[in-house]
Image 1 (cartoon, helix red, strand yellow):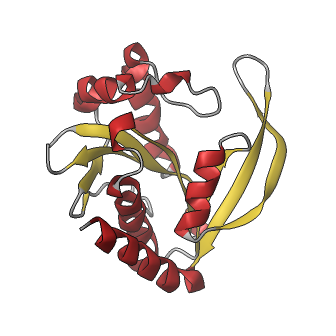
Image 2 (cartoon, one colour):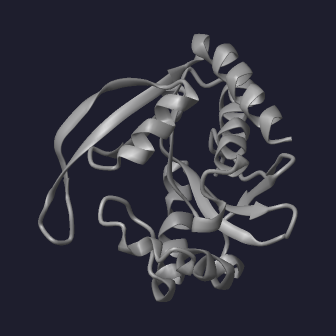
Length: 197
């Protein structure tokens, strides 16, 4: 079956994004352990012993047109996290970039900027997307600030959007970058990445 977003590897200077597969499981579990990321109540990172199920769910989303990646840090060759294209609307050439997380030691480095640069470039320059969305929990202030730094604009807040396993309602903040904004966002990301050397 042909999808708008086909499996591909995206490579930059600091990272390569490769289609997520069961073989990534041990390294992804190690990445989640770095910072005990699953303890963050306002986001979803799998516990190390749940990584295999996480990968199965992520790869099953291919049927809906999504594409999950393992994030590999190029200098050391380790898998350090995951990200994906999800909630794909091929007819309207829209997708969300989400489910993004990295081992704690790689946060606040060039990794996230380059991952977003690679994925946004693929969406807009290769696939001809007209909009790319980002969604995050209302209480995930670091994520909201990071998305804003990318150059995305807030579209709104989906109140009581989801219910957690504990029965707590989640308000989801929706951001987007549209095609006419991409050249300025690209220039800004390239500028930020130059500063990392």
